[in-house]
Image 1: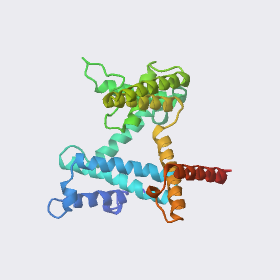
Image 2: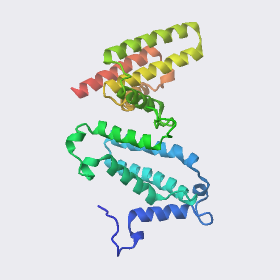
Image 3: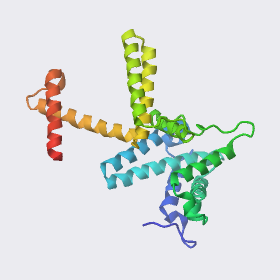
Image 4: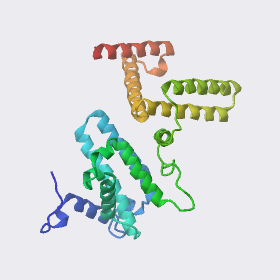
Length: 279
């Protein structure tokens, strides 16, 4: 396992400093890579999001070798953004590392500051209380910070919906139980059906958004990450559809040469095989 370099060790010998030097060279306007030198925060941001999802995918698959590579790709994104900020005279990688270290120490007073652990029996509640204090410190005196402040609009919509409802729930704006959420879900589905029958696409889109928002609320109430749940269903759909393709290929056909009834039967066959393998 690597450790930070000692005082008598050349910093370039350490992997982190080597990575920083690699990025500096890639961004050199004269001798660097033309593609890397043309990038901005905005153009790199989509890659950052993509790499985070690839980390999650490696974890989901239990592939630790792949996880190591994906974490490296994600670290590169941090280094890339930090390098561009340094070039702009704003901050560098050391400032990023210092800021997150300070934040972790500040948000864990019972670990680093000797605060009684009993005061933090619910780590999440304590964490959120400290975050609220930090948000308040950033707010303007004439405008107190809102409950939903600092929930980034750039988050994937389903994740943001969970975070928004979680914040609102902390101040009592929440359904008492999943029973009420399910009732609301049925209400929203009925409203969507009305708009579909009316042929109003814009209103149908709004109602569909309401349904997805209620589902995000339901996931929160069930303590289920909706992205994880949907990722699992995507994998299940992919697995079963590939079974359909494989079975049709046995007779030299493709799905477009089949019909819905046959593919439904093969889908059910895939489900039965999965159940048998899980038994």
